[in-house]
Image 1 (cartoon, rainbow, N blue to C red):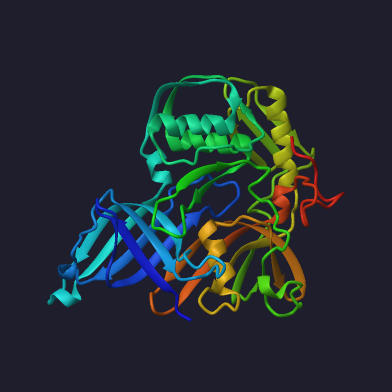
Image 2 (tube, rainbow, N blue to C red; image 1 turned 90 degrees about the vertical axis):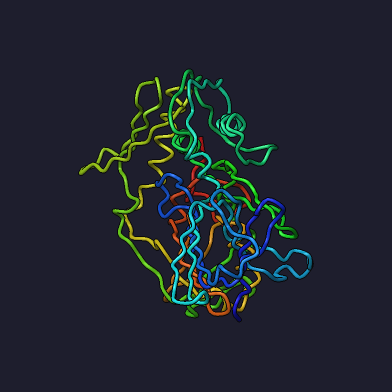
Length: 383
């Protein structure tokens, strides 16, 4: 069935609904596991602006969401945000009559607040990298969720730093091998959520019952968690294969881990590790993740609105899920993690998603009591 897509923006007195929405295009997350986190985007087209009571303007908070009861035990949870951010531009193409006018609203995600900010002569103490992220966000007055955070790496003392805030945050992400997650607010009211720093030990926590995309060649072990799909893409090892990793910690000697084989394919990352030992452990950890020379699934596409288990998929997309997910393709099982996706939606018609994936073993740390990462002889302890 067609999804009830809606767009609401805050014109200063609370969220109001944008009328006559024609198309929505959303881009979230990242495509490759080594990519830095960029600003998420959303593009919305609407019609007949002459009939609007409230006019969207640059800087206003905006949400694109699916409306409906997708968690039956919680009937008041009816707002499932697929994008949250602010309006960055508005374009109007006028036709011969007002009904022919077309408005295009360009939006940017919560990452834009970091991307537009500069850190000037900022200093940070030696501490957990998640706490440093919170310090950055706090000093800039940016949206985050306050509370406990589980990260495993420590940053060095940083003095008189000058540079772009998003670039600096991505350095923290590389140091931790974590991620930035656009976390939605309440699903029972319209509100902008937060941009959270997620540590490597929790970002890909495998679900007890992993969701899966199934082509019908293998009976799904959990029917209620299975989705169908109609396209997937394999890419060669050139996407994510390295036999040497060099970590460049600020103020310290570079640390390199390699297999000793040739030809050498090197991955270099800048970090703020507090010791050369932590940097060396990081180099080995990353090297272990990218040693698989086999091709892997890089993207998968599906209709959202035709899914039997529509409720689950809507919830997962809204939450920006990263749990290990199974893909069944021609009788074989592939474990992947979701890195990001694009959604193309026509309200009243169809909704399509393309998800960008990485092989599950590119996060090959050992976690007890986990259906994928808890396998002995397949994974290794983190650092």
